Length: 160
Image (cartoon, rainbow, N blue to C red; front, top):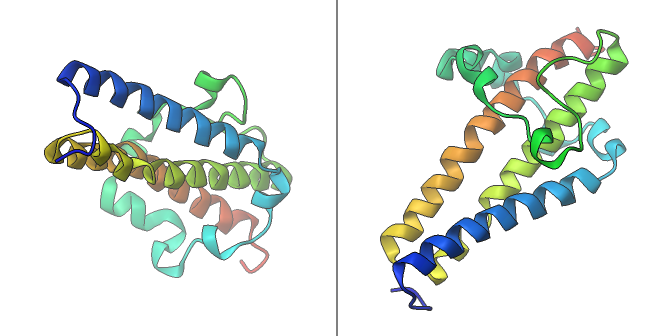
């Protein structure tokens, strides 16, 4: 039972506005984070050995087949780093691209977090639908970022 009881049309409208608000707010906050934060090596963005430099994601989800269908967030905010392709082939270009995959990954992990708030005004089944939406919308993008960064890391890593 939702805490706030509203007519269905209002619930749908509030859901659309709330998701738009959360996606844009989180995107803007992550865009404002310094690039140096993402250029550093951090446990949070580490590509683990079991990911096999991104090959795991290709094997499990055939990422190469569908990753080109995902829209880059830069088309909506008109800011940021377009990750549809590399911006050069120098090591510094690849490291910048890898850093921007970290920014995108963080953005999409954070974009999942507001989903439980939707239980406040949605019926139980719709609250769970909002959780499912958050996962289905964000996890594929996270997988693409980890796939791309895993591949780049093998090129830029000094321990090759």
